[in-house]
Image 1: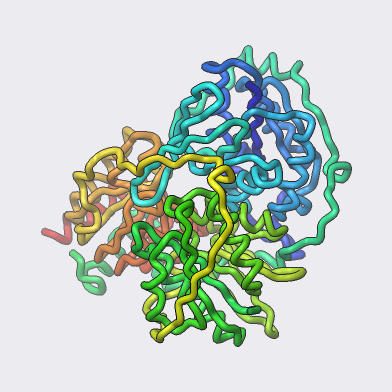
Image 2: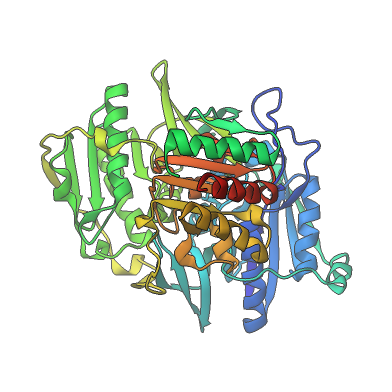
Length: 256
Length: 322
């Protein structure tokens, strides 16, 4: 079985973000990056499924040259090979354009299953997987917690709201978006890191895959959100802040 | 019609709680942009909409839509949108909408602007606000090219209590669907376990997030909850790691709470968590990052290391209680 996992590289979760001078994106020169966390769970699910069903796990990542770090990590964890769609951040800010580019890059692969995280920690559209499924003509299911393969059919457990779940049968080939946290992530072994250096990374410039289509949404600007509430914030020494807060809670909020 | 179409959600004929907010969004945008407003709901529940001020309610009935499937909903709505030709199609940003609306938009060559938290009308053009980087940054987005334009609105972005009542004509719309077009087979809904903890009944909730770093540290926040006389809760990563049971999770995939006081300890405040607690009467945040989005909704906050702040707070609370 051939499983493709779409992964993305995003700024580390604890990054202090600053808006760039143009107000269109963040200052990204000094940031450190990591794999988008939901995609790490998608990769883990794919590796677990390969252990049961055998076959191949191919990662695809659209991003700048620096994304090769995240691709190498995925290979070190056990992916067999990778496709790096080389593009800068702006080209990938429209999820439909990205979906079309990725579908084109995957044309020759004919995967049995495509997996990706439910959303990205940066743009957070939560749509790439579903768009990719539609462009590739595949059935899909989102927010998947676990899966069982039976012949050519997967039974997947979907998360719904308010603690509800639903099992769904989906025929292969198909696309799944994976919910975070449903399984434990593995670490790369030393052997894995060594092996990763010899694994194939196919580089495809996005410009060569670009599907001509007019832009349908436009990002005007990005900015720090204004406060919706007037908050009283203490930032002094812990003991002092604690005393001030307790006083407010006693005499203003009267919850103590 | 070149108006606004609100696509709502129901289960067992009962509208989803966020559906009414999406309907309020449609009414509000309708009056700001001077456009007629229609609403539709698939698989039943359309009669509940007839009591609102709308140009019409479109009821789409087909036995293949009784159960939700992304294929069925996409094929049906594509036909409805092609026939009605609305300029804007609005959805509540529910899990179900996240499952099919990007597919529908893609099938029509459009992009869904998902998770909208605000809007403004700029010289007659709609500008939508959505969050990036887990709520740390906002973005203004405009539609380009030809309609229809698709958007989904996050919980709390529009207020259901601003809905305008009225009397709307109900019209049936039939769609062409065949069973062979629906590729996935949904099974029964289920819950994992009975909930022993009802967080919605608590007056005070003390909630813990990623900032706690490891399972062995949870007891620090439990002590704070005890000192407040409140219930302990958590954000999703804590429950995913198994550090606290799922029944203590607050957020879009857990419980929605509105206690008298909600104390968020080491929780950055991603939108999925905020939608589960922002109705709380008083919100207190403790976080080391002054830019954490949780401070945007907090009434009171302490910027500092929770491992110093929480013990200090417990000591002060015990002092105050004498």
